[in-house]
Image (cartoon, rainbow, N blue to C red; front, side, top):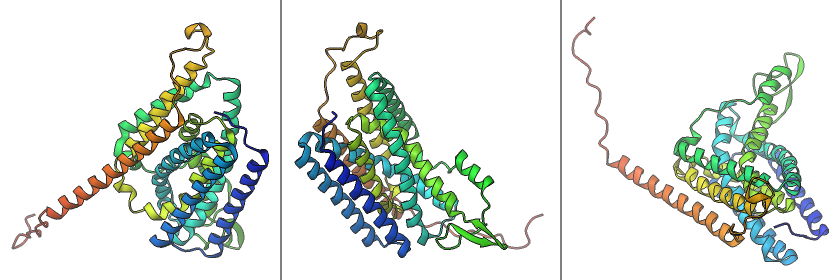
Length: 347
């Protein structure tokens, strides 16, 4: 599942992606505002369209196999990134980030996350190339994560946000103003130059997203071993995350079955990784160090079907549940007004 795409195509793609990210940051910095639902929908469709166009270019240059892997990986990363939005909402409210500055925070945080994820991907690719048995670990970890998601269920997004060590360290080390100063990272407070809380929020968003990469990076390596495809799926998934944040901000609590859909996807990819590890086995205590002949190979189109199906079922079931809950709430009688006792209260 590693493909030899032309080096010129890979280089041009990376340059184009960096240019899009920088343009996005420039637009947000020039006009900070709270996007409307219509604007968010348009931009989400633009980034989805860019991902599909890129998949078409990959198909033209490298054939259908890498294009299918990209689409399956992009869908997986995008769906896992939606789960990140629960935590992003908690971080924004915890730090009381002004609404008009939240776009900029998300863009900078996403860029930080992409840089850190790039290091993760390079490390993962090196491990896979040298030690194929690492698929056993990746697969077991994804299955364990799926079980954890099933146990947490719809309450997985209700836990309060806790600052990680890096964020707490920044608070102690950096001189910081008590309030925001528009979109500035540095300001003057009591006669000296200090940082604003924005710098801490940038780090909180970026590093928290990397924690989610512990799930998503092994998952994408279960669909393709090509580091270029792995990285571009992460880029296209994260690029549309800012607009999706504002589009789904008020709807995330309605996607009650999304954790179950993500659990199904992670469990499927985890089993797929274990089967692939068995097919290329080199561990001495498994089948005498020889590959297991009965381990089936799962085609990419099957992975794509399972991923799309799990997301569709989880989304439709969530919307049906939300509609039923709303109808039930409307049928409830209004609360009766409190009856205050006549005369002086008993002591």
